[in-house]
Length: 266
Image 1 (cartoon, rainbow, N blue to C red):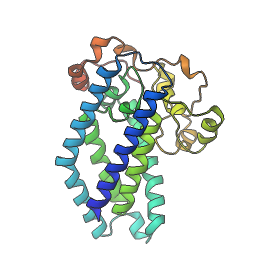
Image 2 (image 1 turned 90 degrees about the horizontal axis):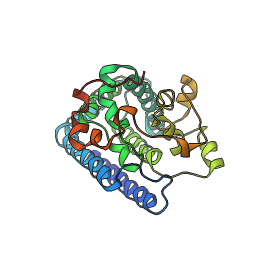
Image 3 (image 1 turned 180 degrees about the vertical axis):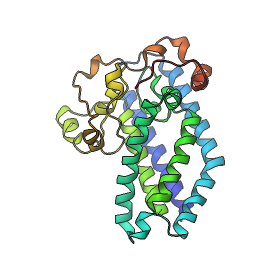
Image 4 (image 1 turned 90 degrees about the vertical axis):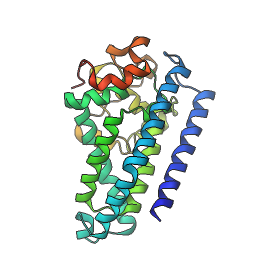
């Protein structure tokens, strides 16, 4: 059952990715600053190489670890006998909340910001940015999530459903599109929208240090990090240190975590 669920997860992710990419081609919200084909080629190569590494080297290990944890009834949800759809609901809420805190750590700790700045160095924002993460960050986050799952006691199916919802919202909020104003503002009371997350990718440090949520926007409201900006056309995307085309070549993006420090987002 688990391999089937992971296949369905990947099919849904790829289908949503392609749909949003096509919508961006027809109705983009912002005109690109960088060369679109060059930048997307870099992002797609990062996505593909990360996916291959995580699937081949970590994917089987993580699934096996999830199954061992479930077999031994480890974690809070197992102790409380919370199963079925309640297990799904609490898994999605808990993992999204922990991810919010983990995201803040990537911005607040210099050693973690070195990895995460690869994501923020993108000079434009579209659905390909949703997978522009350095391999070191992806591997570290996967190991961290495994530790959280050991404490949480989530069922394997619940974890896969979380990954589907998380992946779809991650793609949507990075997409180069804009929802109608009233709809976007209404949705922001519950979920993260493209307008809300676009602020997080602004060059302004106060903006970058806000709107860390991925699924539920209430984490930013509870954490005092929510920021709403209506003049989205005026936002400059990326990091000030990486605004030159030669600063974000493929090689320099891959070497970014190991290069000289840039201004931390903390």
